[in-house]
Amino acid sequence: MKKSLITGVSLAILLAATMPLAAHAARDPIVTTSNPGPFEQDLGVPTLDDVRRATAAYHWLPMALDDGFGPFALDGGDVPTCFDHAGGGMGVHYVRNVDDVTDALDPEAMVYELDGDGGLRLVAVEYVVPEQFVENEAGDVVALPSVLGQDFHKHSSLPLYILHAWIWEENPQGTFADFNPAVGLCPIA
Image 1 (cartoon, helix red, strand yellow):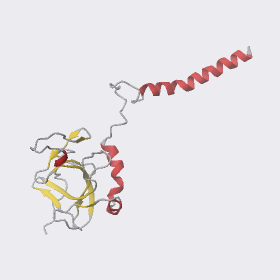
Image 2: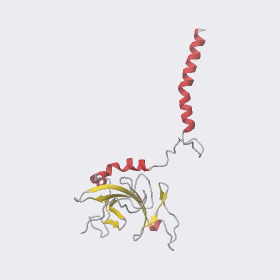
Image 3: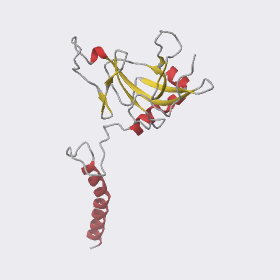
């Protein structure tokens, strides 16, 4: 009697311990159908919070430089070109790995606002793909990139397709707008 009681109790403990694991496995996005429940998430799809975590170290520009980012300068120099528009500022860009590969957690550009004292403040990231990887010889879009559920769009004057994500400075025009009225305009040179 004691042996069967101990065996029964042991079996109950074992079942109780494994039931949460089995329930978790049933919700695992890797093994579920393509229609997850309301509290489930697809861990393979990055979010803006994931991008913030992946780029947080770049608030300190020397870290971005150490990781291979360099100033984007239209004149080819070492001083990054500042971009703004009547509708808002953008700032300066430090770029790396501009090619046909897009990765939400590895943006091609860190976007910094210039403050009044010559300092830089990380305000956004930008994804960049040269138009040669997006358009055919006739200029037709044949491979429009997207990331974070957003399609890229053609830059107004450069041969690039781009997408900004204002993850460090709220943008009243929208998270993925090009310019941000909350970001200061470029200083007059």
